Length: 266
Image (cartoon, rainbow, N blue to C red; front, side):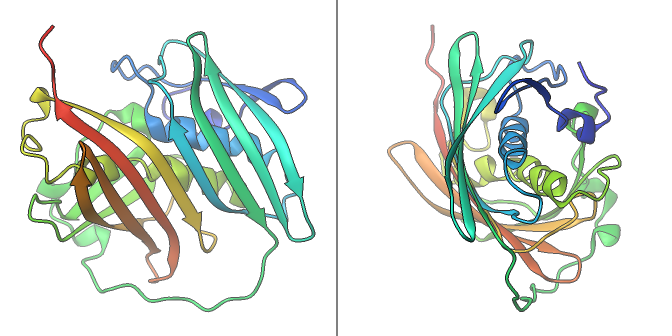
């Protein structure tokens, strides 16, 4: 296993044949792999087949089955298209149980734009220490809550940043943003569930996940996630997040559909 305090190393995949890489992850004691890691590593595999001057602009991923954190993951990339300004890649992540993730990513040549400005919120260094969320150190990010999600809806605000030295490769930072993007959305997506405050009585899982990368961002600097609940039906809830850097630039948008149901007695 790579060092648990080094996200950059976790995003350094081992090539085993053309357009196929193997990734590993830390043992969190959960049994299943943290979803953000699988999305980030799948995106990293895709970026390794695209020129550096054509960064990712979006990804769409389906979680097929829970990954086993005690097994390596094989990422196989299919080069679907290389156009004049866009490239498209499909990545399937496999373990011994079969496919665990299917991801499609699209890449675009850079074009000029204008920044957006975020709503003013307390900067991360002014968040009350009681609102700093403790996480397993192996998750490799820091999490500070400005406003939590509630069953009544509204906007949840959190600051997130990756830990460790990620270097200066924009592709690595995009993958790290994808890694962070899985943290808050499931809880917000199912916030309206009657058992949302009683997680021990629930079976909850992410079903599908999408990220749109609007502008380059450093994932080892603070990023503000503004997350909103968008309804729940048939045990599925939807959350959408806008992501801003500390200068107020809108750098990404994330959407996730999550499943929430009462645990069945065996």
